[in-house]
Image 1: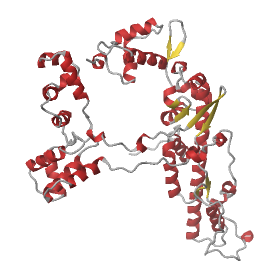
Image 2 (image 1 turned 90 degrees about the vertical axis):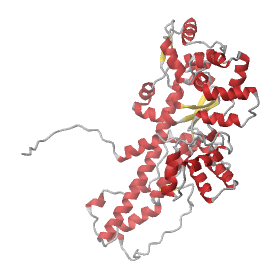
Image 3 (image 1 turned 135 degrees about the horizontal axis):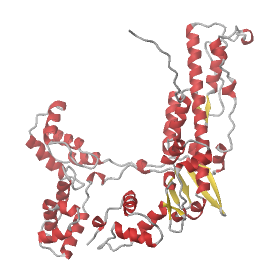
Image 4 (image 1 turned 180 degrees about the vertical axis):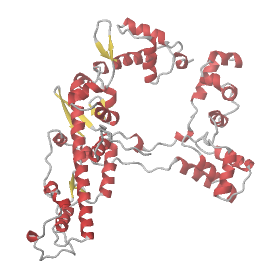
Length: 491
């Protein structure tokens, strides 16, 4: 038997406007333009003043009766009474934070698109080489299938049997495994060397065998890759010397020859410039010891609610006749107007939050922005900034994770300014960035034939007043992507 009961729960829910703001906040400047274009395409009630003509022509409505007396129209339904068209007609004033980007005189320069050189892709390059090889129609289609199956690194990760099945089912080409193997050898002869390999070992061997195989160094390099690749990658050079009966000078020549090879031939072609393009969200300039913060002009688009949609709503809303289609039209226009206003409000709130957060970070790390010396970075966590600006830690995290600031000393990711505190022997709290900088300097100046182990690095730090455990040194080293001492060893 079903039982009914009454429960009271306290739930926290986000409104659609809050969700939209959160999503916009974490979007970096390089992606904001795309997001705005998507919204402009989806919502005709939203306009970009930089794209539209400021002199607006008078709108004509075919279904509008010029004799309509709007002052004597019947009373509106309750569902429309709450809507005030004045909310959309008034111009929003820019607040104290939103006006800061106006101080930046490089608006026009920042709005220019970054030119991208037109070049053939990695796969187009392989296809053009395949076109030059005299092949039967069947072999040509097999070659196309192999090229299409390569990954971005230039490797063939799929088994030959799977390629044979793909040819049979998708292209109706009945091929034997041996035929695919033969065409794979043809692909492996293409540029860049090593393309079409099925493993790192095969990739390196293809490149070595295209060199002068009569050279004794090349011969021994092929022997190392073919039989002692594991020892080579682990840098067990003493084992290689014994196994191949070589001295250190000969081994050094073999190692240098192998290190010249490209382990990822697919990366030989230039990667798209767009993927590595960093557009700073903020600019900090030093004016005689006074830091000035400005927001990138791309973060302040000139958006407004379409006046033609506003007038259309007034016309529909004041019409004397109200049938079902008219009510649907009014509801549709109202929905688009609401959506446009919410998006504009979210963009402006994003500008305010970005500037408010960055201003707090700049004030906290004032000495660093003046000097550019990482040793002047103060210990700072998300909570420190959140308390200063009166916002949640998650909001600060969204701002810091994907935003960049351009200074006179370089361009930095905001997340890089946050660090934990470490106490020195004198009781002073310093940033762990300072410790990482010292570790980087020590490792950079070490004797590569006898690299410094973590224990030795710990002793050096203790001598300088940083009482840190060896495991902490290992953690910082890994965070900086520095391998252990054995893997840093050079001949």
